[in-house]
Image (cartoon, rainbow over all chains, first blue to last red; front, side):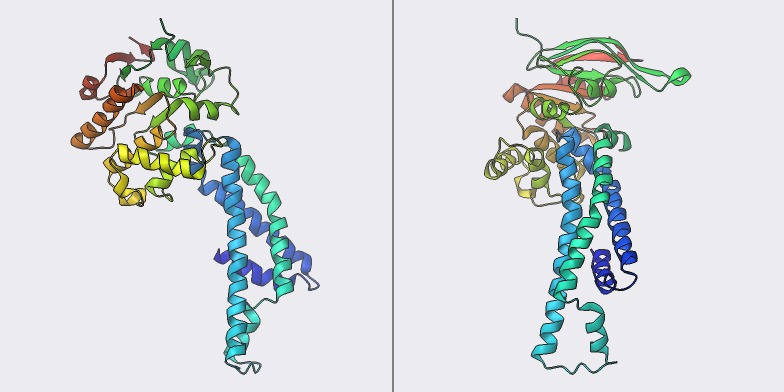
Length: 150
Length: 225
């Protein structure tokens, strides 16, 4: 989730810049890599679920659900953090002089609403190829795998 | 006479290819009636676990037929096999195979998650019922790592029962347990056979467990005797 939170910060900062495509590519790579990692990490669980009667579709939904859940949770965390920092600055009328620590934290972490929501949509859509990979891996895990590995 | 609940006809299973082919099952024939408690005993590597996996539809035989409650699992597609497993069989494995990130209650309930026949309330009710049966209700919120081997195996038994399967397959269920705990686990399994008339197929190399079964079959080098 930390990785995704950082991804949100980086992509939201850069997707409108001249190198925007590179940032979107970065979202694609990180999202795909994460989907592959999840499907690898969950191989034992997937085969156990298949042993106890889950179909390929059920297992696939579980993997896709986990990947999307992490993305949504990271988005909500960044939204919450941005709310909190903006709220603290406004409530205490904190001076945001350039160069101060708070100003630097504010500039680095706080993501404005439009870039945050746009980044969320970018990351979600860049996850589609990774989800296809995860789907293929979920379908290919035989139920016997868990038994052989134990 | 009623049709046997499990029929294995001329089952063969080979692993590997060419020169490296190993025959794990050789022309195995077997019939098990509903309500029987059958122990398949043999040394490690004799093919007894492979026979269990083939009977349960976890693996397809290289040749032969397997009928589970009248359904030929060798003719069923990979896509439909999980449904048969869900409806007809429960598994208890040597290594428990619980999901580490789920609590005992969730592990048991997870079998029913994909089921459209059970509402969430029904699933919870059923999971609590089977946890009570194996005397693990108080440990329902514990994770597998917080439980002993015997407790984990009880949870695995509860998980195997939650979908009310007519057949229970047990693959060395006491293999990772001390003798006293293993004895208790076997008593639970024998009780299920007696009281629920559940068909139990036990695979083990431990001769001490034979006393719990009504019929004992011996296996050696892929051949059932």
